[in-house]
Length: 267
Image 1 (cartoon, rainbow, N blue to C red):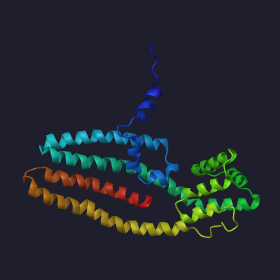
Image 2 (tube, rainbow, N blue to C red; image 1 turned 90 degrees about the horizontal axis):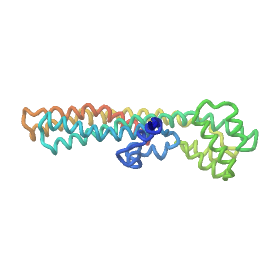
Image 3 (cartoon, helix red, strand yellow; image 1 turned 180 degrees about the vertical axis):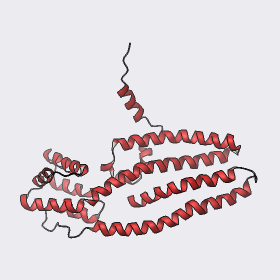
Image 4 (tube, rainbow, N blue to C red; image 1 turned 135 degrees about the horizontal axis):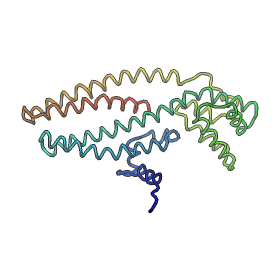
């Protein structure tokens, strides 16, 4: 009897994607794939492949329901199913996207203390590799900072240019002041005197609240109302589609609001 390697079979299954992976990742993650690539795990990619595969199934099921249950026109059923499927893809992939953004934000929140600690080590050791080793020896609790510095030490041990590693290493920070401070870590004026992220975070929070109120009204209230009025002229008065189409937008409206909120944070 031939033995079956279930682990290998499961691996192939999780790697399978109906849509081309590069296109799927680009559509689902957007700018996050570039700016926060360091914080994307294989688990995130696996979930995205699962969401992409489920989108096609969702499209087929929704089309069957809309066409055969409500007995509407094929083109309208296709349109509704397409909108529902795209919303399904973006809303569920937004869950993965928001997790990646949160990891990067937590990394950024500790940058003020980490960079200043590294600068103090530079004054004491006058050596960037020794400064990294000293920082790691103190026991950094954040696994991403640990991996971040371990990768730098690994590349330094391979003989890569130190200045180039420092310059590229600073690009991981979203805040320009952190980036510049890290890239000038060998200079004596690299101390960050105040934490710029705190004020920026407060300002962004206030702006997002204002923007989201407008988005919520437009997506969840006005759009279903307009669609109801338009469909009432196009469809028979007793057609259930008049209620289904706006209800579909109303359900996804709140979820899309969350997607746009996280998109604003990521940008």
